[in-house]
Image (cartoon, rainbow, N blue to C red):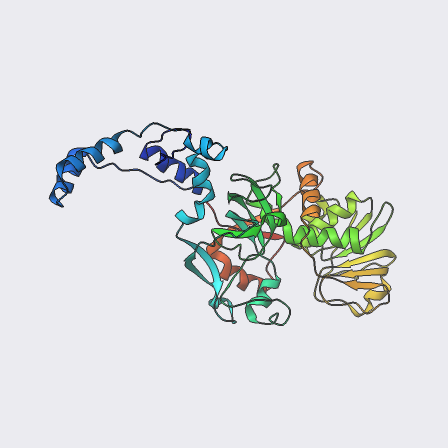
Amino acid sequence: MVHTLTGPRPLTQREQTRAIGDAIGLPVRWEEEPPEEARLRLLGLGWPAPAVDGMLRGLAEPGPATDTVEKVTGVPASTFETWASEHAADFLGTMRAARIHEYGDASVISLEEVPVPRPGPGEVLVRVAATSFNPSEVGLRTGLLRDVLDVTLPHTFGWDVAGTVVVGAGDLAPGDRVIGLVGGAAAEYAVAKADALAKAPRRIPLADAAAVPVAGLTAWQAVFEHARIGRGSRVLINGAGGGVGLFAVQLAKHAGAYVVATAGPRSAAAVRALGADEVVDYTTTPLPGGNDVLINLVADVPASVTELAEEFVSITRPIEHPRAVRFVARNDPGQLAELVALIDEGVVDVTVDVRPLDSLAALHHEAERGLIRGKIVLKVGK
């Protein structure tokens, strides 16, 4: 017995093309050859006239749908739209990605056409709206962090991702807006474990949300896990004008702390606007003492730092003190979801400088000259 298998409803080629375009998020156009021209071309190739006429009739209108799939399997047939979504990666050829093939100065960064990655089991394919610049990527590019970070060359930049799910998995479906800490996000598409991502904030543009994962998680873990800041704590945040610092100031205030923040003249107003109780210009004024905890976010730590607080948390170099901890942030989608909730509630603001992806090499030059302020996101999608 021969079964005729179809989806739940008939679709024209034009409708199928539109479904594929919707699945991959790109415009796909169906151009139809006039039947008379197609008939002459096929006859010219030696096809018999009855076969040509029968094929053209079949292509003109889709055949009727059958319920054979459900009768045989007990499960209704999937729609063409579902199939196109599940196979979206197969319709995408190459993408732009910011990569390095060797360590060196900023000139080793190049935008290349590379294959779109294919998601594996439990993974999603994300169409990237933006990634972000993290200062540690300068050390990665130069090779200074080759013994710290597990990097294989060629390497695609980007640890922060904000984008839209194209191929879903787990609890994530196509069309979901997500953020997360992944690898290789400085590209038009990225692959990530579904359970490593969180839903993106609704209150801010999707591209701006690329500022949140690395900087936000680092600040969250510094404030709540390592410093254990609570109501009435006095905290000194050293380097409050950077990407992590801007989150740390707001989270410390949310925890009920009295926040003393160090910032240069270019960042002071932004830090004060985010809730710092005191802003100290580190370029002209010594760091104040009498703090319960110091959160250090800068590389240059003054020798007298241990006199400024009772406990110390650092994300850069270690502080030599019995009650000091240095840590590297880990990915925690649960914490990221909590941070997203605070953003959507208006408790935490996200302030960013948006640049195009092709400005990455210039951005590395700026970082090496100390010209970077706040958090910079690199917009990838249109």
